[in-house]
Amino acid sequence: MRPVRTALLLGGLTLLLTGLTGLLTDPRVTDPFDVLLWAAGLLVLHDGVWLALVCGVGAALTGRPVLRGWLMAVAAVGAVAVPAVLRAGDDHGNPTLLPLPYLRNWLLFLAASAATAALAALVRRAVRRAPRPGP
Image: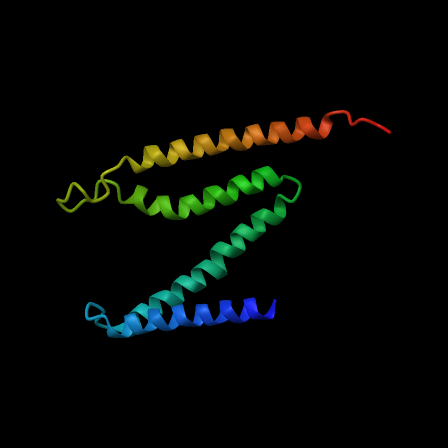
């Protein structure tokens, strides 16, 4: 196990060094400190707020693994989809920027994933209630 951890650590440090080198040498980045400040704020928001909220909801739903899984999937997709939904129609004269019906697509995802989760919960309940053959 130790060689795998060492390889992963070296790979992670290499990626970190590559990213920092790119940040400090990119001519389009005028103030690297602003980027680092933004990244620190994102880390605090993710680990301090989002992760705490998700863990709290997950802990409250300990007896409902299908619902917890669905909420985790919705949270992950929502983190990516909500900014596009909120910016719909804000194309600044460029019709190729955000060209899709993001609200409709996000709602379709919510409906399809909820139906899938409900079906999984029904199958889980049926399997748990099915009589088991005895010895």
